[in-house]
Length: 108
Image 1 (cartoon, rainbow, N blue to C red):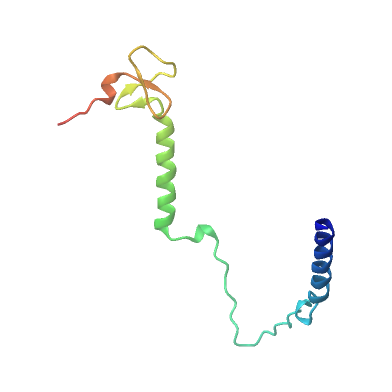
Image 2: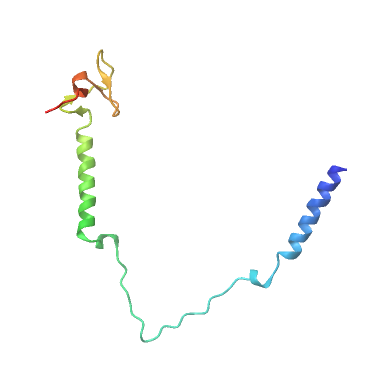
């Protein structure tokens, strides 16, 4: 009996949806053509390179920082790091192993 009610309910829902889903508002709307008048102005497209100077400067600074970071990879506070684990050396977040002196707190 439950299978019959499930099938009947699904059929009823399908019929109701198919009958109520068609309406005049579902028809595609075609926009009317726009007429240009004499008082319209032509505007120029602004490319990304037309940004203010300070924005370009920020980009250059970021690029230089990233280049320097790549150059200094494997060095921490003037100490050379090693890729392979060594006895007494600790692993840092950059994946290199450094001597314990690197991680000592320096108070000046």
